[in-house]
Length: 326
Ligand SMILES: CC(C)C[C@H](N)C(=O)N[C@@H](CCOc1cc(O)cc2c1C(=O)N[C@@H]2C)C(=O)O
Ligand SMILES: [Mg+2]
Image (tube, rainbow, N blue to C red; front, side, top):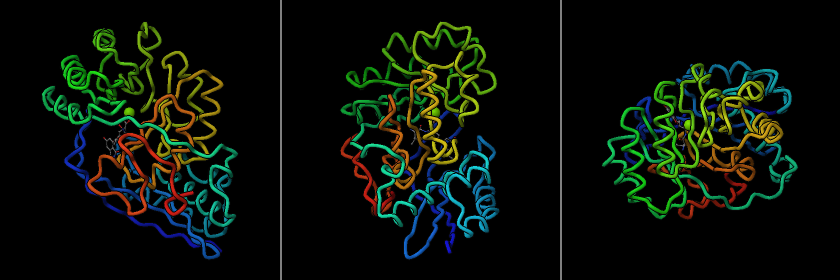
């Protein structure tokens, strides 16, 4: 019978990671491992306070379904037991990994997908004073895609500073809900003037109705406003793209279904992540192949990754080895 174990693990960030909501110096992740018949499947998640999650609440949620996991529930059954969120993500990814290892078939094949190819990820520039952001961008100027974190007031100066420091990079920005409906048009104009190609979550989720009435001169991507499939239909008037994260969707099973539906509805796609190790990125690589932008740079911000972590060559991510996941 399957045996579940749960562990909280900490990975220091190289320096610190700053967005509009605050700063972090370490990635704190929850890892679920399920062992059966000599095989071991693992899944990693990041509890996010923005969605009411803590390490303790996520660990409790995982423990609440221990009996069902140890009775052999599969990914389809798991979707009925927990709501979308970090806890279900760790368990869902562990079940995919276990199934791949038990059957000796890679996870992409179980999902009916082509073998993953290398992809190019965005590299995130934390929010700060324009001069600090320019210094970070100058170090990353050879990277093809930069994601600039924004904070509201002073964003035009931040974007210009990064653009001057990295003239050849494609730029996307992420306000993490820091703009207001009143300053939306002004901020979008500043983005357009510097050639930004995507604006992620400009307005607070729940206060984003103004997006339906604004001329979206740059494609706008939902992040905090979208978690799983059930929300997609009502977001069509407000957003042009969605950021799919396994932690929000509650795992690879829902993320794959979400990608299918988003494609049918005409949304562009970003494959996103939290600050986490390669174990959280590996399953997300299965959706990265279908994304317009890949934003799986979590491990690049860490001082150390897992020993069997993904290979990043600059911003190119090589497919995961089965020793890591899948
Ligand atoms: C390394 C980056 C975080 C990865 C990616 N490029 C990215 O921008 N992801 C998220 C950012 C969310 O990250 C946060 C924000 C926060 O306030 C607290 C946390 C995290 C996180 O990853 N761990 C803690 C809980 C995005 O907005 O797209
Ligand atoms: Mg975001």
